[in-house]
Length: 546
Image (tube, rainbow, N blue to C red):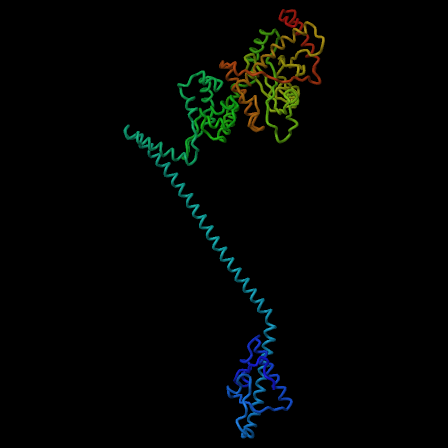
């Protein structure tokens, strides 16, 4: 019988020690199996070795067998040893079969255990992520609750401060003068603290200086293009339309300051950021005030100060124009100017002003302002907002004035215009063909004098309101309201005798165009010839054309 390859004996305990004798997956287990296998081969070959004392733990030491103890070892002891040996072999075979079955079971169950292990790891990670998400959601809810509590606390503090200011005001009104001064100081301190929660601190020194009664009249007129009386009249007329009520959070802007912001912006054309610094208000607040006051001027003051003359006023206008020129039936002078704008986002080509661009060598966009002026220099009709690419005759055809004339309201009346307008039954224009006669020259001179009334009125309009001379920050859809307010304020200044400082005089630069059909009515052509003949023979024709 061969000894184990590693030279070590199997563990004691006979055949029943097979399971305990084979370490799982180790080299010692392979050696023990080799020993048992060689032992079975020897037994099968009939080479029965001397009996072993397998029940004795010392039967094998250091891989060597012990020698028999004497000659009496045979006989009964040999038979008993053979029977024990058979039982040991049976137990060994049983143990080997059990080990092989366990090994197969382990190999077959390895993928299942790995899968189970992966599933358990995935479940553990998922549970950990859910726990982390729950903790984060709880922290977010806590932060939101704390923020809501902070907002509620600030609201309560603001309400408490306002209530304290009101109580202080009531106490100051009821207390003696000494205690009243202290209460007023406390109220001012509380009010100042309250304003800091809502309004940025800005200096109002300039406006406080201008609104003071001690401010010089000339300086006020230079700043606002009108005297203090005219300004107060406008404020009184617009008070109900632009006034706002005080709230628990802050005091409303006074009416005088609201009107002053609008008039200063129209008069100087300053950017809104400079207007904001001058009046101590926010930029967006100043822009809002300008639009609100202009809308109030249009709705409240325009029906009073800019309207078409009635029969009595028309008769006065005709008499005044005839005294100065000798042309009968003239009810007004007409002119069209262009207001520069920023290039719009839509219909850019329609607002492109080709003539201004060619003259100034700078791309220009504009809208038109057509107006009719009476003998006093005030507007009686305006048409605002048509694109700058349209010629004057097309603007006239699209205006309400043309519709009024088509309805018969201009019968036996003339409007004097320049060469850019066509000759119609109610529009009187100069002769434009070459080789004019003396009579035609004289007529053109008188028509030019009448037309100059409108030109000078437009020059004063743009001089007073410098915002019309530059591209404004107002949106295109809001420009008609702003321009209409400028025309109304111009009429108020003209009717109240507010002059224009020569230092701010403005020269008009508007290119005249010739309409495709300069004569639209044969009856109007004959009427114009008759007027020209009467002017020459009645001595109203001038001699400057010689």
